[in-house]
Amino acid sequence: MNEPNKKAGIELDEMVHAPARLLILTILSVTGSVDFTFLQKQSQLTRGNLSSHLRKLEDAGYVKVTKEFVERIPRTLIRISDTGFEAYNQYREDMKRLLDD
Image (cartoon, rainbow, N blue to C red; front, side, top):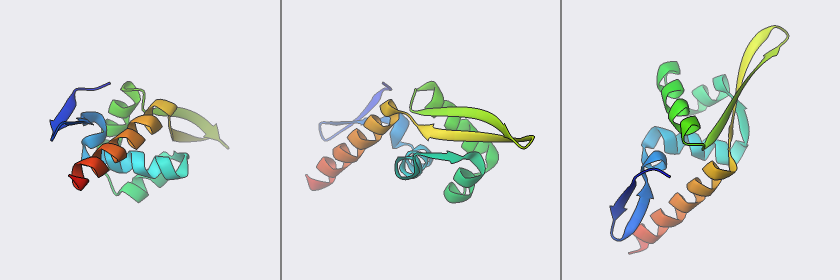
């Protein structure tokens, strides 16, 4: 788990709290698994920015990245891990409590 951000007695996961990573996890929590191109279009992040955030999420164990070839064309698939889904849901609950206070 990453260093939490304490606000009003609630600890927010810094890995999820970053806007771009929150957006990525939100998309993945709904879709499950997507390819890089789809995620880039949906998030409107640059290739480099998306790659950087995916690396951080992958290192934290929040997403799984796999590479494959489809008819000789490389394809990168990204899916949210169980750990990532739990962290995302916990973040949502924490934000609801924070906003309700």
